[in-house]
Length: 189
Image 1 (cartoon, rainbow, N blue to C red):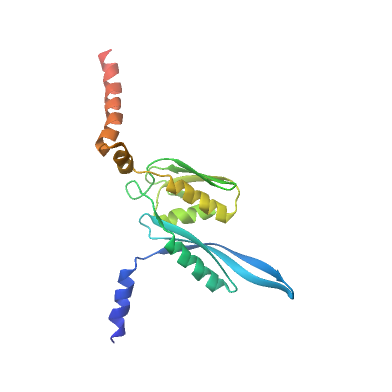
Image 2 (tube, one colour; image 1 turned 180 degrees about the horizontal axis):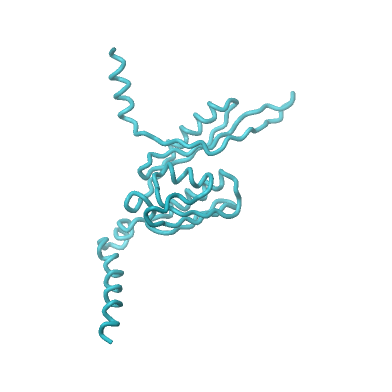
């Protein structure tokens, strides 16, 4: 009976993660007596609230490779600032090796329009509306790394304001003022 509450407490300390298995590959090592087969796994882990990481693991058995990859994914998480908790703040490019990814913010209701490994990253991240196009290689490792390169390059309006030494409303205020001036100009003519 004493073990029940302890298990509940352990589960509360660690946030709930979404884990996506992207690929499993059988790899062979040539040795003196022939070939030794092993497995490599690529896993995406995220909390669904703006944190995501990826990891790869190799082992002789599939479950062990997945466990190693999952541990690495949890250790290497990055935080991505989301707009309204559902999409990115702006469009962004990312590349790794021959893989290139173009990620666009999308209006509400669009959903995740992305293929394969890129989709897994967005689902684990918690993005609901995004459009992504990957060109170049279709290698899952390079596509995931290119997507992470793009996500690392995103900045929120708060970060831009802090870098410029201004307030967020000052940055957005210019656009609104220009829009009002453009609307008033035809009325004056």
